[in-house]
Image (cartoon, rainbow, N blue to C red; front, side, top):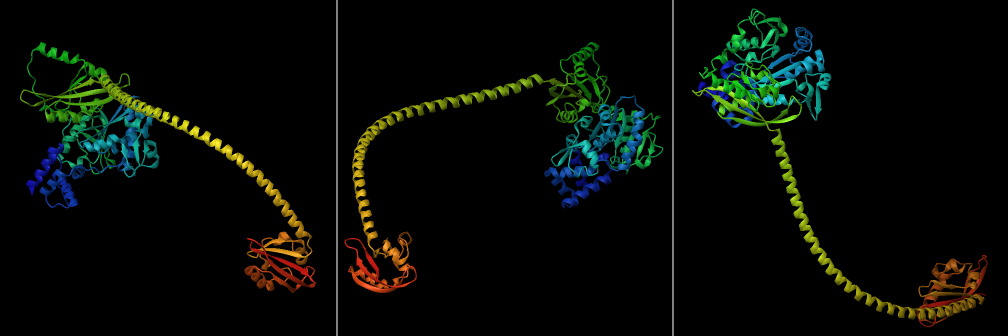
Length: 606
């Protein structure tokens, strides 16, 4: 079992550069066992197989081992003490306008670093914080640093913030919140291992909360030596709630034990040596060189036409040439740790590039963009990290060069744009030529179709002329027929008027029925006898009349006359005149002659 555990720890060490030997073994094993139970694995060997195949589980284990539980303003009373008591003392110890330097060691995904920015902004104002406060946030986990640099958090991650602070320091982006840009530019994130790397120096405040508790006592002491070197005399160390220092610690004295706030002692004389001890052994012995050659090499680097920076194996700057100092506005950086300078993170994060160049044993190049500090204009750089080796193969350090590729990059972009435009124009030209050829063919076809249509129109015109002549002849015939019809109509009107005059002059009632026994004619005698006008009875069935005449008794006689086409003698019927007086009426039925179906009723009052 112990062999499998050692293999698992070796895998952590090799795959992430995670120095497990510096962490408390019992805490490591406890957290690894927790992950074994969470995924349902029984032994370390099977869990190692899972880690090798699952990047997600590897990340979860790494977060568990490093204790990634983080939030804004953990233990609010301690943060309130920092704002109300510590920050005023830090300001009092500095000249007006002098910069305050703060380091959040083990910042995880950035909430602690942003909490520091908010605390200083609330204490001295946002504008003063932007001008005076610089905050460094470091961690060993690159994935956590990516999240920290983004500065974007969900609502749950900011649950400990009041609504007022969230609205003041974060901008809403969909369902997430983004830290405000002006303060974000004062927070610099980078990879740093507090157990091995040189510390960021000249600090006013060092915040390292809930990190030391994961290390054994010996490693804690080494880390505190580095912290003592990093903090100014009188500067503050802010630890986590579960961490504490002895009251007689020679490096830091307690200020407020309840809130784990400590101040660096002014009589500390061993911390500097302790802080730099790990890198003394890594510096290679100086090689004897001729004085002229050494001077020539130094001058060649100093007057090189590109910015260059030499860093030793411990991460300390050995030399920065003139172009480097001019372009990036840095001075007197020799002997200072690289990771405490802004150039370590902008325009490129140099730490992972240096680690990659050393591990792969060859130069690493990367293209980045940044801002020219002299002109505040965007610039493009090719950053090249070249590892430097001693004769025995040991690492001396790296040479970092910055080549300004702004012009060539822009020319490349312009060339790509021109090439794309040329291809687009060429394509459009080809398309236009094809369209012209197609249009020409269509025009030729249209001309031929027009000629054919013209011939058809000529033929149609001739046919129309012939039809017009025929129509004129037909019109003349119609006019002749129309004249004949007018004459015939006049004759019919005269005959109708004559017939109506005859019917009107007859004293007896005359009713003409059609084949369906509907009333067709009704003279004045019928009107006087029945009391109904002609327009009231026209086209009505005779059998439906209610006129004082018992028409139901005539129904059989009428139908018999119509079927036999023979007249029936007069029939006497008792009836009632329009005044309600009883009368006797004779009715005769005579069928119509010829092809007309119908009959004539002659009605007389006796």
